[in-house]
Length: 265
Image (cartoon, rainbow, N blue to C red):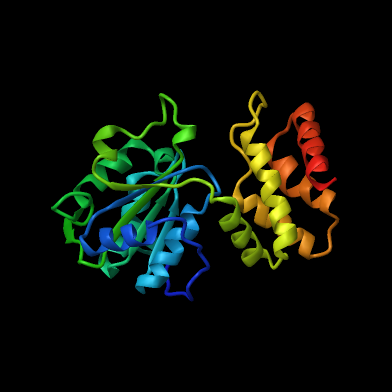
């Protein structure tokens, strides 16, 4: 689990539609927000951007199979020979009136959603059974969660009873012009070479019949562009930042290299 807090400079984010306005409206009306979309399409950066834009502390939690309600709320820890209560990131966000962002919330254990429910309706309360506290979330507090619908299966699926407690924004990869601008701004690569990376990504994402769980993400394009700016040859940068992360299968990797060669001539 990675929890962070602090007011930062405004992180770069290029809006695709009205997602910034929807986020601001959800915050103003004390509504929880769910972000849905593929890995690496900008969901986390969007939350970072909006937290800084609203001037709110951000607590980010990377959800995983072992994440429990206690990890979010807090627990008693032994410090200096004494047992001391230590708030978890969700509790700190409620106390400080910040944003708690649960990244890939479907990965967390089922007891986590039970804790979230009172914070996602008109009660906006967090009950801490171990201390007997019942915290009322201030107006500035916001709960944001994200998940990737493409990875859902029967064992890891966001229940309708939970999903319908949130207003939601669907995310996808940006259009080519926007994605080119993002890759160029994030890496420092010129627009022409950034555009070539985006064209390659478009071809990969449109492939059918290839053993890929997902197409290349905008994040991976930024990684590749960063390596190129640092002086790495294009083919080696693509191998390290695109081909290897996307697949372990030799045949698939070769197909990706052939596709890259067709784009770059």
